[in-house]
Length: 127
Image 1 (cartoon, helix red, strand yellow):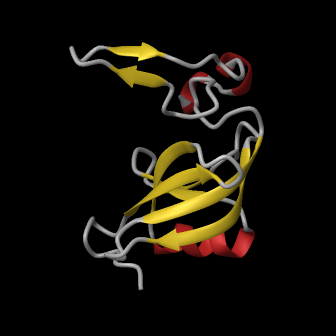
Image 2 (cartoon, one colour):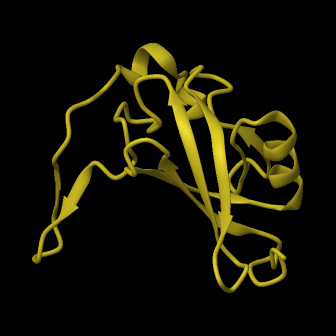
Image 3 (tube, one colour):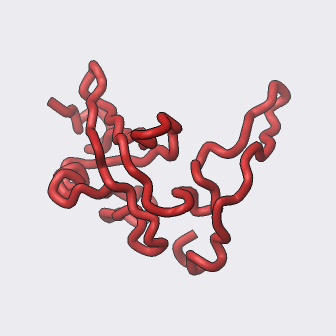
């Protein structure tokens, strides 16, 4: 049902708070990370930069408990509805990775407050 062939074995996975509907982040999944997500009940992605599976929260402890998985009409994108366990999902310290608003002139302005101090949570290597 899921077409992993369109994008070199990866599909975009939109992560949404199951309770509020807020979009928290976008990650990518391959068949292995999807299988691990389904097995564990926690969101696991494929890190394109690290070239390996990456469980959200493996360093921060800010785990995403999966409540429902949905696939789009083309079978090439996932919607991962989660219960976030922790103050935020963004490695920059925000609840959502979408904390900047893009203006008409192309500039981006921060529109949210930080939920946690990333320096206390992450090492330099992981950022």
